[in-house]
Amino acid sequence: MKKDIKKDELIADLQRTRADFENYRKQIEIQKENERRAVKLATVMKFLPLLDDIDRAILTYKELEPLAKSLEKVMKDLGLSRIPSEENMEFNPDLHEAVTMEGDGEKQVILETLRPGYYYEGEVLRPAMVKVSCR
Image (cartoon, rainbow, N blue to C red):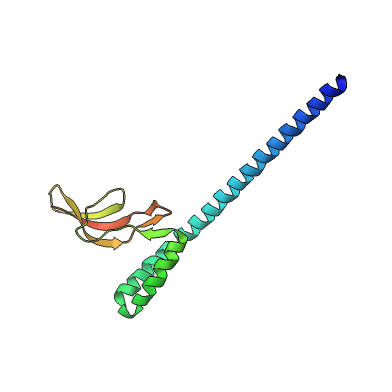
């Protein structure tokens, strides 16, 4: 009878140890994934000024336009996409940062994009910097 109690205690200890180890393993995997995401985000953040420079170069030198497709593919692979901010589009303070506002009307529309904004994995990474007209 004492052997059965001891055996049951050892089995319970083994099960707890196994469960503790499994929880530890899962926690380590979560930490690794969070670190990978943080490193990728830091890399993408450092990449944004370069994207801005490339965009300006493509606008200035039309012969660089084929580069835009390659750039879009790389951005997609990184989980990065541009926030729409075309002229006459409705201003959205969640997606756009107004640098200047002209007029005194109710409807706010974008006049010009000064710096593109980006989504990173579906979330706003940097809002688009725009000029806004109130009509």
